[in-house]
Length: 481
Ligand code: NAP
Image (cartoon, helix red, strand yellow):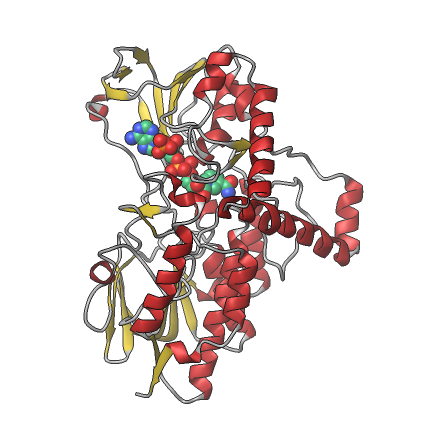
């Protein structure tokens, strides 16, 4: 049995961040279990062509590690992945990683967590989940898809051995991942059919390389970085968030931007109507692309909006009887986001998380659930954003978790459990607010579990950070061995 003060699972932005913050707090007895052979989370997994961030890198990076080397305003996946590696190396995190360790279960037993991987058990006082919300692939099983003769794979498990040039390719899905890969596939495929079930609202993303002067400025005048990040932050929290909350002026502005983007790029009225959503902006994630609409206007690209009825050896069939011959199928169909911890059984004092969350996941401040002492969740229930960089939330959570662990140590106590009443009151408030936001304007999205919005935060990142800065001692029970 391996014994550590803290066991963390996941080595993406959350896992790296909490590792750094623990070291800064003088806590070094921790390991980070990672199922893959490299760190990086979503940026390791998603290597599809065109993968890049839809949040500008000056904001989609740690506040304590600005990177003057960003090549583009919105960075390519490769540079973000390298940034994660560089930061982990800078803070000497590598000795803490245990790669190729898939966590199967975790159980709170006798004041310790017992965390089971395929190769053994780890005992720890604290268990920190940094597994993210978007890692369980969702691949719909269409009738006959197992009979398909060509290659078929999920966008997040891109098969780089398949040469798409001169092939007839079908992409199923038309959301955040799809709009990045479709323009790249369109450049090389003989023919591309995009199967869109629901259209999405889309903002322009005028990506470009930074000039040498801008990079020089960024490297030599740190204040410039702070100012630029601050402006991006204000735009996201000050304009996009109010639009999601229902502020009429902000919502009008966002609607004006998305409609102007559509009108500017799509002239064909039939195509335009297929691409125009009938739901409120922000109910599903607003997309950002500077290339998707133009790709759809290419002569080798078709947008198919008829529902898929099945797949045979060579073709995809629609419910209206169309048959689209295809050599390769790419499933850009997203992720299973509920239940949380789908592949890991987590058992607390008396029940599993699956039992505790049978009506949908919830946690105090998105981090703590009653009956699961010393389980700290990062990017947990109701902490996803539709308007700003998730790294802001992750940093706030890492600071909070370090604060609570240090508080326990200072007081000579061993465990902390959120009070049931505090958790319920917090969640009643969050659900009440979410139900008045745009996320509730549709019946289903990856933000929901059976109609309950389990994934998204209800406020601005500013509010979340302020709340986490405050003292919450009265919301917890602390105990000795
Ligand atoms: P997603 O948003 O869940 O989109 C899945 C797409 O597949 C949707 O168009 C969906 O249609 C379609 N689909 C799913 N099941 C289908 C079925 N049975 N038949 C036909 N179509 C089906 O997944 P995603 O695009 O991978 O993005 C997920 C999240 O990852 C994003 O919201 C974002 O948070 C994150 N992401 C971020 C970036 C970034 O740049 N930072 C890039 C990619 C992804 P419906 O809309 O009708 O369900």
